[in-house]
Image 1 (cartoon, rainbow, N blue to C red):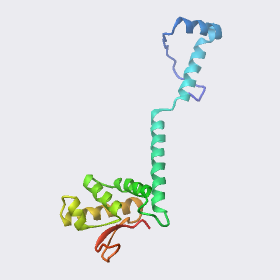
Image 2: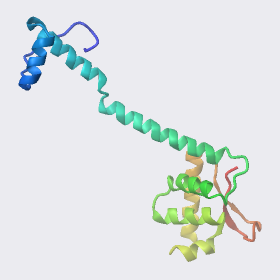
Image 3: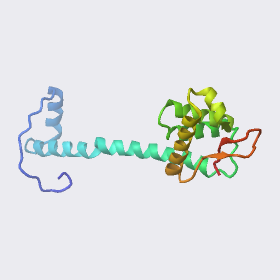
Image 4: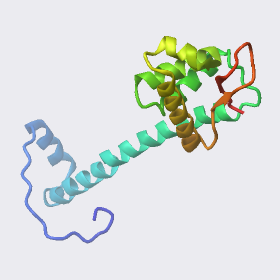
Length: 172
């Protein structure tokens, strides 16, 4: 409606302003043109002010961009250094995003810190039994595959880095 020249039914709007503002208006705008001047000023102000939905969308887009950048940093690394603190923090944030509760986060943090973790090690850290831990890790692994398009957590039966039958983060 603001962009076009056609304006529908008009209404009277009463505005309280200071005497100083009225004096300035009288100096700058002719008596018969005040209504048009005020109408144009309101329309201009409304054009300049973004609506709240637009601002919310812009903020959400920025948050999504930030997440995408972090995802790309983790997923596209040729040879990630899992001992690099920045890498660990990025990975924790990404994986915590798919956690259902604090226990899932505890499992992920332990996994990221050590690189690989056995079910027995997780039993000591959490108050869960072996089967519960397996179910949680499988759930986390499937959610990572859904969200990121690839499994980031995998189980290896063979001995690797001194651990046998352990869960490992496999970013490649």
